[in-house]
Amino acid sequence: MKKILTLDDTYGQYSGQVLEELLTAEQIDRRITEMGAEISAKYQGKIPIFIGVLNGSFIFFSDIFRKLSIDGEVDFIKISSYADQTKSSGTVLLLKDISCNITGRDVIIIEDIIDSGLSIKFLKRRLEESNPSSVRVAAFLMKESTKVDFPIDFLGFRIPDKFVVGYGLDLAQKLRNLESVYAFK
Ligand code: IMP
Ligand code: MG
Image (tube, rainbow, N blue to C red; front, side):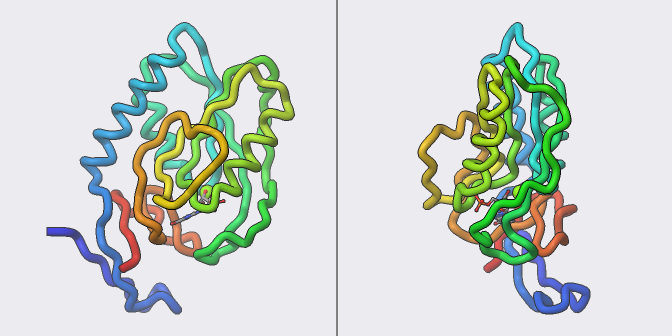
């Protein structure tokens, strides 16, 4: 039986909307354990810098980071493209840049979800400007119809083209605390 959630009055314009569980906590944990092993194998003997994309990646980040058998440094970058809507605004704003030196280092971007691909393109370009030794991407989710012109090196799940929440992902800053991923019906 799939878990169903109906948003109550505290969700204002979204009250009454019905959400259906898309990925269970167990599925997520299993896949993230595998991804942690893939990343650890790829970076054996190295100490990469993991750059989390705020806010959405914070739960994925802390889970995958604890699955690594290699050491890693941590930093964060904050961008905005959604502005509390459910569709990309088409413009990416850099709200907080990284605060470490990545020149000559191996960098892994930790992103929650790739939808239009605009954000990840922007982030890759920004980090490559600082001449790191490598930049790879680890994304928790990617939507079915998304195409980007570079590889997503480590991907958790391909999901249908629906708006999803939970496990760090938000609807207007809310619903991030759901343990699993839910899609709007
Ligand atoms: P993109 O630039 O269109 O690829 O969107 C990337 C960003 O938009 C992600 O980092 C998320 O923060 C947000 N986003 C995209 N799709 C969803 C969704 O289905 N639920 C919640 N946030 C999303
Ligand atoms: Mg995001």
